[in-house]
Structures are given as structure tokens and as C-alpha cells.
Amino acid sequence: MKKKIAVLFGGNSSEHDISLKSGRFIFETLDKQKYDLIPILLNKKGEWFYPNTPISNFPGNIGMKSSELELEFLKEFNNKNRNFPVFLNPDVCFLGFHGGEGENGTIQGFLSALRIQFTGSGITASSIAMDKYISNQIYEKNNFFVSPYFEIKKLEYFNGREKILESILSYPYFVKPNSGGSSVCTGIAKNKTELENILINLFEIDSRALLQKPIKGVEVSCGVIEKKIDNIFTPTPLYPTEIIPNGEFFDFESKYNLGGSKEITPARISENMMNLVRNLAVKAHSVLGCKGYSRTDFIIENEIPYILETNTLPGMTETSLIPQQVLHSGETMSSIFDLLIENALQ
Image 1 (tube, helix red, strand yellow):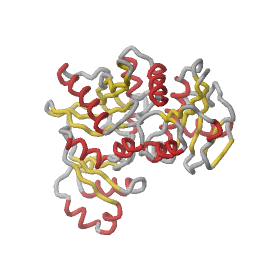
Image 2 (spheres, one colour):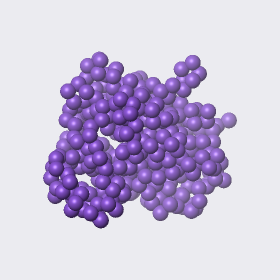
Image 3 (spheres, one colour):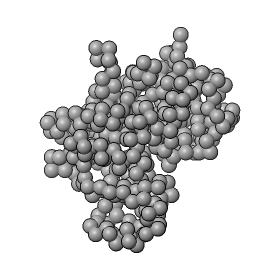
Image 4 (cartoon, rainbow, N blue to C red):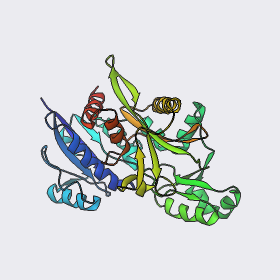
């Protein structure tokens, strides 16, 4: 008997549009001979849209912009509910969310309360990995190489802006939302004015900013998949991808626009460094308590791999890194998705 899989995507985060593309990719990749699939869109207002029964074809086409894709979906499936459609009774929810409540433990807690299984990490690991300040503290305590960092809180900033800005004596700093992802509202501040400009936009989407000394070197990202070894799901590293952005860093455009960056799998690093990065990706997955899969980013400077962050729901679009790494390994994304579903059920 086929398992009923609900593919969840959208959400209210700044990565809503990327999640739409991930949701479509997941739906198209899942084996329809094994699963009955129900795509469920969560819009930015917190409303769920869905078909009444499993379907075989996702609305729209692969070349559509996210906004067009969403319109096509809403046109075809206009069932709307403020509450999650529990009556659809999925065996597993395959999460295609990125950022915000979809990745920070909120959705995970919600589904756990409903006793619905879901792919990826649970509540605690999701919330910790999304919080860059806390995850950096955990990395440090577990002997990772971490670039110096500190945070600026929105309320404290607007109550004492000049004092905070005057306390920052050494530029540049890489600035990013503490709980954001996909390089939204990130940038390098080389002076006070640039920092102010970044923070204005950043504090529209997050209440905390993380400032970190930039690392210059080879940027790599390494996926981890929990594979069955002796019938036990065991974190297993893929081969890391080397990222060469066209811009100053691996920003939103570099990540999601075709040709926005050059991505080489496997990364052009020594065998010793390759093994070290792969082992560190597994270690990050484990110390944060991740489940199913993750992807950890590093920059290698002077033969030292500095950890940047771990993604518990990494991108799953046609240009995303894990699909590239799985292809290099000789496996298929369909088989990887089977593992994630089996892991969730178990």
C-alpha cells in the first residue's frame, strides 16, 4: 500500500519564494509509484492551500518564477483553511520550508503536537541550528574553528544606536540575520555607514543581527545524509562542493540564479582537507542533534576550515548543493528522499 506523503512548502519567512521551488522539486522527484502525494502550500498569511486528494502533477512548469508558480497553485487548489488539514491524514510530511517558522522548530513542534511524522530535524536541533549565535557557541565548545562574532539586538540598537556604533572599532564585518538563511539581508560592512544600511533592512526581518569577522579563502559546503548502516541510520557525509561566487560573497543571487556562482563538486582541496571537512560536517550534524540530513558551510583560510553554519532544511531546488553532491555520489535524489521518509517513519 502506498504511503501518503504531504509536501509542505511556502511559509512566512524571507525564503518563501525559494521554498516554493523546493516544494515543486521535492514533489517532482518523489517516486509516484511508491507514494500518494499531496502538495500543501502555506502562504505568508498563515493559510493552508491543498487539493482534496493526492495528485500526480504539480501546477505550473519548472521555468516559472516563484510568484507565477504560487498563482498557478492557488488557481488550481483553492481549498483554504486557517488550520492545518489534518483530515488529509498524511503518513509523513516532507518539509520543503526554509527559514523562519518552517525551519526554526515552530512547524516541527506543531506537527509533533499533532502526532504527524515529518522529515528532517526535530524541534530542538532545528531551533538551535537556526540561531547562529547559539550554534556558534556550541561549535566553539566542541572545538570547531569559529571566526570572532557578536550580536546586536534590534531593541538595544534603536535605544542606543550611536553608543553601539561607536563601540565597533574594527571593520570590516560580515553581517547577517541571526535566524535568517539563503543569504537574505546579508552583507559586508566596511564602515559605520554600510553597517547602518545593512541593519535597517535586516531588522525588518529579524530582531537580532550577527556580526562576524570575514574569513577569506575557499568556501565549501558539505551535505550529510543519514544512511542505513547495519540497519541503523548513521550520519554519512557527501563530498563537499566548492563555491566560487561571482560577487563579493555567496549571496542570494549567487545561490539561486543560474550562473550566479561557479560550483565545483567535489571541491578542489587536498585529500586530507576533504576528509577533515567531511568529518566536521558529520560532527556538526551530531553535536546539534540533527536528523535525516543537513548541510554545513565552511571557509578554508590558511588550511583552517572555519565553520559558518549548519542548515537543517537545506535548499532543494534544481540548482541547490545537496542535489549536486548526490549526483556526484552516483545516487539519485529519489533514493535519498526514500531514506528521509523511512527515517521519519522510524
